[in-house]
Length: 183
Image (cartoon, rainbow, N blue to C red; front, side):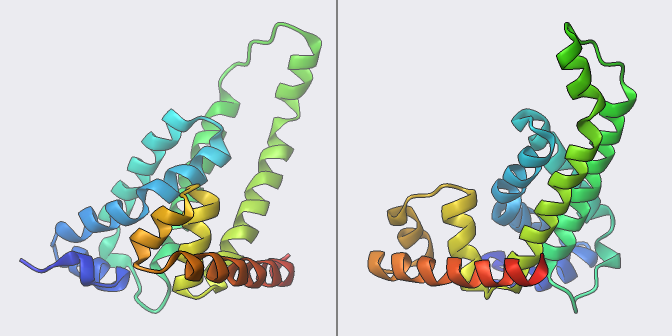
């Protein structure tokens, strides 16, 4: 058995495409937390976001043989997650909405454009994150998406506390530059 924790995302996907299910287990371990956070932001329901993250990983599993290693795994993963979330939102729009007041009815009717705006903004954030180095992306995601403490991040990334703080500051600056460039 191969030690999957040392393999890159691309290597894990190649292994998964060849039938090694341990690759999927490691990818779920690496990305389930951030993915649930991303999906929660889209569907505004943490429990449903957990279900949608499972659906996303099922699609990764089913389509592993189609994965192309020349692109980043995270880009592909979040593209799948975005499609799963859009399917969920379309299903919600087809369900009848019961509102107790005119104001609630107006909010229900105007929800689709707001959802599209939220998705577009999240896509810009993902595009900016994708342009960061792996180290910068990990720092930003661990602190700003997963709300980890500086001490936790230092332990997870095997860094000194001061290095985490200064590195995060620089990573946020680079993120802001990339975000401005893509928006």
